[in-house]
Amino acid sequence: MAAIEIRGLSKTYRVTRKKEGLVATLRALFRPEYEYVHAVRSIDLTIESGEFVAFLGPNGAGKTTTLKLLSGIITPTSGEARVLGHIPWRRENAYRRRFALVMGQKNQLWWDLPAAESFHLHQQIYGIPPDQFTRVRDELTEMLGVRQLLHRPVRELSLGERMKMELVAALLHSPQVLFLDEPTIGLDVVAQYTIQQFLREYQARTGTTVILTSHYMKDVVVLCRRVVVIFDGQIIYDGSLTNLVDHLGDYKIITIRFSDGQVPTDLSRFGKIILREPPRVRLRVARNEATEVIRAVLARYIAEDVSVEDPPLEELIAALFASARNSRLSQERGNSAVPEDTTHSANH
Image (cartoon, rainbow, N blue to C red; front, side, top):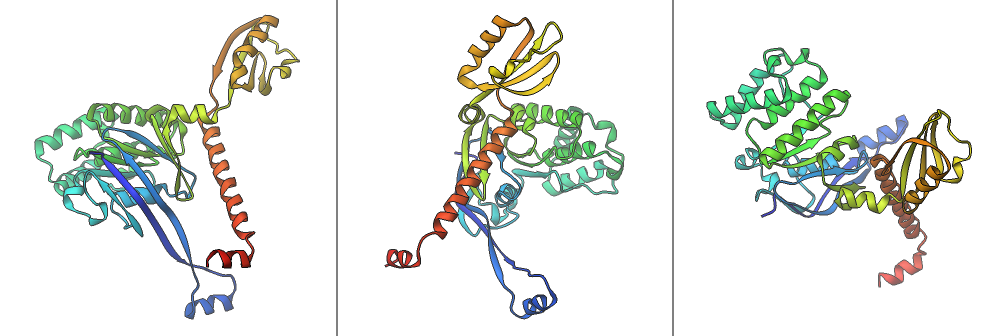
């Protein structure tokens, strides 16, 4: 059985439409106007046990809303979902003991207490046996390098240290499904790397099913093989990271370091120069021309080093968003261009 199964899941919010001005504000008190925000639009998704899946999208795309639906924080407008066989919004205790949600911008630890005290509270909430609690806590804090910080008040910890403690708290009851919403947001490079390595090792060892949302593409590259992209509440891509790069990356980046310390002036004929820092230059060339370009450059000049890379994942994801946005705008223009009499006759 799949760990997560979603069919036609939708979430629509009714929000008050606010207008500027005193008169409009007073009128809204007695006759408010509403508009509907479609946060998630009839999505279908299946995630197998043990998968580590990246769930990507721009701000407001529906990522966090979907995680809240799957964790039972909110209920859907329509559709269905099952996580480990449970319907999340029923909020059964049996389900709560089998998943965890970590949100990078939300704290679950008591601010003025040491993390150790919050951990004991989690032990009581989840009914974790003392020997299991001690063993798991010690393993997690050792892996994350925070054991010596257990008795320091959470407010005295750095952002990276707090995030590590949040992960420990979330994993104390050994959940089978883990939802991670921006776990490395705002962290420095060292803290990001430590958490990435921890998550990779922990997931590989335990087989936990993980859904990760992140704006840091390094998290995705290091941790995930499968990528699901959501835009305007709809899934627009679901597949491997490799296929995404192959599908959207129609160019390669060639970096050349010249041995004489100078960069030739006529390299633009081989491709688009995107960086020139003597003795190094970076060229953007068509994917199917990369090998021939390297051969031509090396036949003409003496190079100290040459490397070929796929385009940055950030650029590919941004291109995917732009394509989806343009498609949506074209669709909306097309709908608005339909004459009234044509619409009328079509409905009859």
